[in-house]
Length: 288
Image (cartoon, rainbow, N blue to C red; front, side):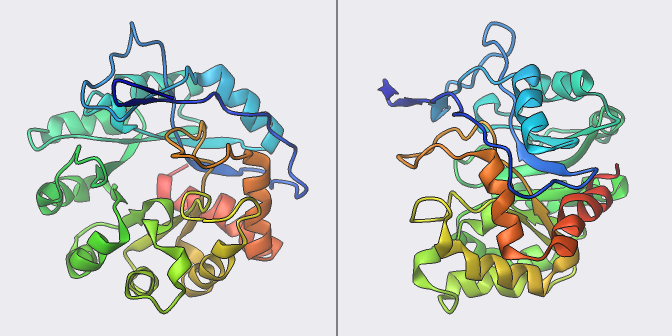
């Protein structure tokens, strides 16, 4: 449903227990928390209104799936106000939670250092909605390099193709959101898909295996399998997994089931590789 051009988000659906047992330390590296709007105002430029998706609701889902550690990603509807993100990290506790913030060009080293003490480990660049222009990328990367942080890049694959050389040259690691938003229906030889695969050969590039948004078919999203398997084969030490809970702004796609999304990972790789992605890679990337 839309209200004055703003999409109203559905509440997450029922969660099934995965067929595959999540290993100890399983980490969801991509989800959002949406608190009460009287406490956390929404950006007037937002594309959607979220459903209330707070820490207790997330923990209920996580318990069913077997998630023990979590990485909250700042959503576009909050712009560069990271209050909800920082408060949520504190509520979860830094023994199990980290965060990815969104900042503008006025950010100072002192502000970044403060966020580090509060559990932030990276900066998200949102090239989809334009919250953070890509022109800021080199300067922000230089600022966060001393902290050991990374850039999380949410970008369409055609734009990624244009800036691939810049991404490789950045002084920090880059985590590609949502499987680089590739046009999966075009096949692995499509220039945009091939660019994402080629980038994953670079030691500073990581990939979040959150595949349902690029899929053109219902679960089990079989059209994503070959791409996901190829990514894992190319960079088994630089793949991450996430639920993308609470699955907002679906644009007509059916509501995902986080338990099934974990099972998808086990379809793409054997259990030992899945454990590396769910536990070891996340430990390295986020400093757990």
